[in-house]
Image (cartoon, rainbow, N blue to C red; front, side, top):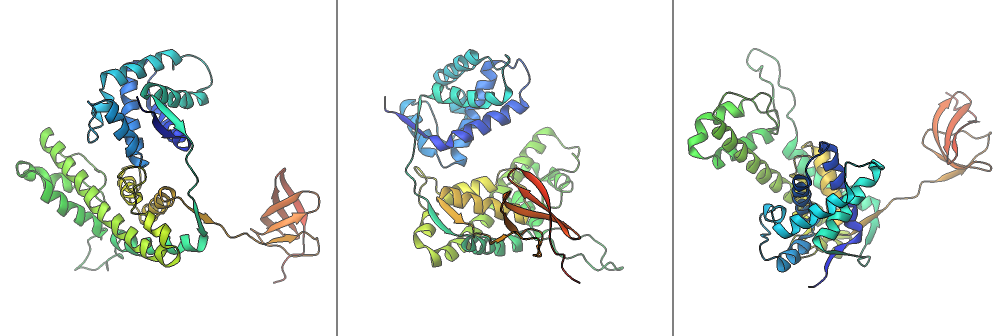
Amino acid sequence: MPALEFPNHNVRLLQELGTRLLDNRKPATPSDLFARELLVGFFDTCMHAGLDRVLAELAEVHAELDLTDRATLADHPKLHEALVVQLDAINIDSGGPRAAKPRQLADCLVAALGLTLVDEPDRTITLDDAVRRDVAAAMASVVDDELATPPPPRMDARNVEREVPKIREIIVTKARELCEPQYLGSFEKIVAQLDDRAMRMIKQPKVPLDASQGIQLALHQARNVVYGRIAGAAIDRAKEKLAQVHPEAAARIDLPVTLKLTPRDVAILRVCDARVPKMPKEVVDSLVSSVSELSHIAWRVAERPVRAYAASQTFAVGELIEHPKFGRGEVLSLMANRIDVEFSDGKHTLVHVPLRK
């Protein structure tokens, strides 16, 4: 059987998965149920990290797996049983430091799935942080326009309604298109209870269960379509900006990470995740982080100037100073002729000349 390689630096993602599941796990949960949750989480982790190659190689070894259905991994008899054996061996409910459990769960997944941890070559492209700011600004120019809340209306007799972000109506319109005809009668009741961004229900109206589930599915699909479109347009704008500085870095955005999924695909997948707040700043931050990580782009932060400390000098909050005894530190606060400075060994109070008003 060929080795199923898993990048060593992505083991932290398996540990983070273990942490999340442990936080929600009830004591004495049967190993077979927890194993299923871990396998579902492993599938999602691979998709959100561009590791579709790992899933494809698993499918080559285990023909029953369907790369479009994570349940086939969670319910695979051989893999599920192997993970249960691993979980029983570590006995999650036994004593021992809780901090060690996520690592143990990651080890269980690696062993049960027959993964071989490998170190990948460093392909990092390092660019100035000014480029990152330009990339973020390019993305924000799209996202801010799409997700912005209109200014408050004039409160007069003709216009007293509260304005809401236009994204709400866009999502609702798309969901209405996707909703099955037999549920349209309940659609408006559900929509009336959505928040300003059509992300959460404020109150659950009285509608048949099947209608509620069908409408929620349509809303979920609509959100993914709409936010996928916005994210794609934002990435296009950022790619144009990046190409002006480093064409290779820009090209990586649409090259496969491991098999088929590209940094663009994964960035969109991540931003559509319900755990990402759908506010402009959070969406841009998610996109910049994802594209940078998956395209192997690092940002060179400009070095801050460091001033030699002298009691005869005037300092400001945020400045870095070099002290002959305490070393390098950052000014935290000012108090008349004194400054609080954070050094590696803790906070120290020093004197300086206050700024004359």
